[in-house]
Length: 208
Image (tube, rainbow, N blue to C red; front, side, top):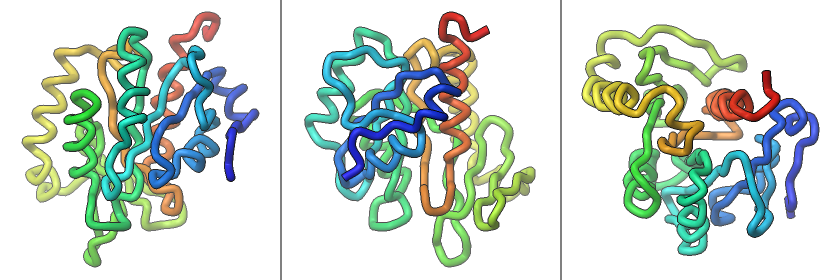
């Protein structure tokens, strides 16, 4: 049993208090270990950022919804990590629909791309249209082709419109909730979550 989970090196580097929530089917303990978070999260204690881990194949527990709502008044920055999107009937889109219904309106800076066999292999940025390919040992980045640009065009337009309306600091202010697909086995999305955590750490007092 991985509890509680702390990675001291990463915690010192980020200087963040990270609380992780989610049903065990979404692997929150593994996510906490990966990102130097605490799971189970201490009750009624402050955190700099909360990570909610959801699995589209198993839904979101009522307890997890209550934990989300408890952070609303505090305006705590929150990241939604989607796991299990490549291992069952539910996919990343299903997870987003679910999160939008029971949490709050999410933002999806990245969408999942699949290989010819239908397996998740890459993410496309709706901000830059760059594709990060995780099918190789070291992830590689390249500009997307016209076909992919057309495929995500409507999603990108909505994403950029919301980003302009809310502002660049909306995430760290606890106003925007990014949802990121993460596969530990394939390393998908890990660096994206680390970048979001870095954004929060830069806003902390004494981080200059």
